[in-house]
Image (cartoon, rainbow, N blue to C red; front, side, top):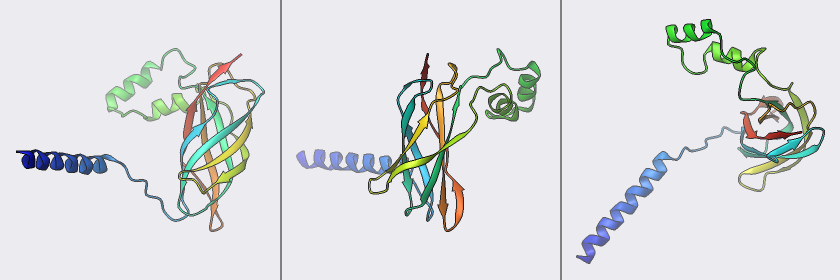
Length: 175
């Protein structure tokens, strides 16, 4: 009886390990590639103060990180409701989330975001896994409506400049 229970327990453990490996997404990087994982900074920020932004990344090799670029933005648009034409077009065409109409509202003249600004990287640590770099930014021209900081990095591999993916952190602007 004990041996049957042991076998069943062993099979269940093996199945759970196999299923957990199957559902875990593997991070496959090409040679020299840099992929941002997370950006960390204080959750509550104020105007005209310096902040250290810590960016966690995965890299294949040691690409040279030149600078990090940021923008403050609000996740909501500056219009009370989208155009009826925009909504009707999306419904009629069965447009997916992220359609041109949604992008126009999120990225166009009705979006609430700061201009892009870039800063040099203060320090990079490749020795940890995942790696980390620190950037010092100054919070200028931020609006109360901004609730996210978006970041990407520019890096050089074999003499070619590349951009990473974008990551963001939630923030709250305090007056």
